[in-house]
Each structure stands twice: as structure tokens, then as C-alpha cells.
Length: 284
Ligand code: KIV
Image 1: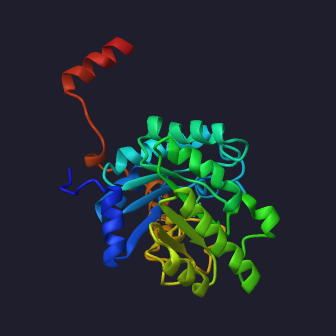
Image 2 (image 1 turned 135 degrees about the vertical axis):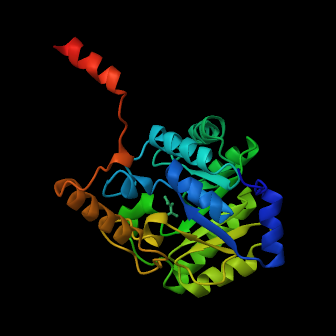
């Protein structure tokens, strides 16, 4: 049990107004969530990146609502106090406002999330309005939006030219006007992030690989702790090499089992002599 207060929307806006940077990290399961809770992280995103980090897919596209709900509920059990956001997976909201509201509601009802995130700008404003009207806080996601990786031409910086950047600025304004309480800017140039953050009126801007000027920062858990075997993107910083620690531990485990130094008596349970003698009698 911790004496941490449950994070609320007013608490997040209070930090933003006071210029205190907000902390956000992705998280996908119960043991990770207990650590995130102990660290006092403000916002936790159960991202559909779990398709790559936890399930080993090449992209986020195969992730289903069932995957997301199962992971989000596990994360909530581990972090009862963080502001928890469920990430709407591919095709859970693109088709219609109705599917968007129903699937957002599942995150709230079945996983006790505090809000949801969806990708896209002006073209998604109708979805944002419908979900907000249902009483569910929405985080937008602009810049590198992995569900559109095919049309974006790969996992690369977005908004490099003034024209492309202006589109992202317009999208951010439209999302805020549609009622998004927060927008994540992923992999846009630092000055684009600064312009959007300065122009935001009632909207928290979070950055991932987009420079220091957003109201807060997001990192992908597996990037921060060197747990994704395929690559670590340049925008990430490895804060602790958990992958190396686990690799070392596994090598020691293999060595001790094969060398017969594990297990030791403290790792097993015995039985009383009379019970053992009776067992021998019973099995003949
Ligand atoms: O799924 C996810 O973790 C995300 C981040 C990349 C922002 O959407």
C-alpha cells in the first residue's frame, strides 16, 4: 500500500499551469505497473505498441481490443493511482463515431481506465467529439502515428517542412477545439512542438522525441530499459539496462542448474520421516 493520491485531471492541469513537467510512460503488465506506481509516474499509457514490445509483431496493426483490455486491466491492478490511458487499437475507432464510443467505453468499464488515446488530426475530430460527449477524456496523437506508418513512409520524423509542420499545428488546434484534454506529439521537430505547446490553451501537450518544450515527456518502457530486442530508437534514452541484468541472471541460472548448484535446501520443501516411510510402503 502507498500513501500516493490518485491522479486526477485537475491535478494534471494544475501541474501544467504551474510549469511542472508531467511524467508519462507506457506500461503493459502487472509487475511493470507496480514499479511504475512506486515511481509516482503521473500518466500511464497502455499503448498498442504492446503488439511489438510484448507480442513480437512487426507493427501495431494486428493488436485487437481483446489484447488491449486484458493488458490495460492488468496494468490498472498494478497502478491504482496513475492517470491510466487505454490506446485505441487499429480499426477500433476509424470506421465510425459509434464504434469509437463503444470501444472507448470498454476501456473505462472493463479496465478502469481514466481516458483513451487515438491517432489522427482533423479527420478524427468527429470521433473525439463523440467520445468526449460520452464523458470519456481523449488524448490525441499527432506526428508519427504508427497505425498510419504505411502512408507516412516508415517510422520517421514528421513535420520537417514548414508546410507539413503547419498541418500538424492545424491538427493540434482542431483536436483541442474538439475537446481533447491532451495531445501527444511523437517525433516532430523541437520547434514544431514548441509552437504547438505555446498555442495550446486548455490542452496538455506531451512529447515523445519532440524536444524539451512540451508540458511533459513520454517514453516507451521497453526503450527506457533496453528490453526491446530489435532496436532502441534515437529519441529514447536507456535509463537502466534491465535487459543486461536479466541476461546475466539467465546465464547464472543456466550455469547453476547444469552445475547442480541450484536448487539448495532453502529452495525446496521436505516431508516428515514417518510420512515418507508410509509413502514408500504405499508405493511398494
Ligand atoms: O502505442 C504506443 O505506445 C504509442 C506511443 C508510441 C505513443 O502510441
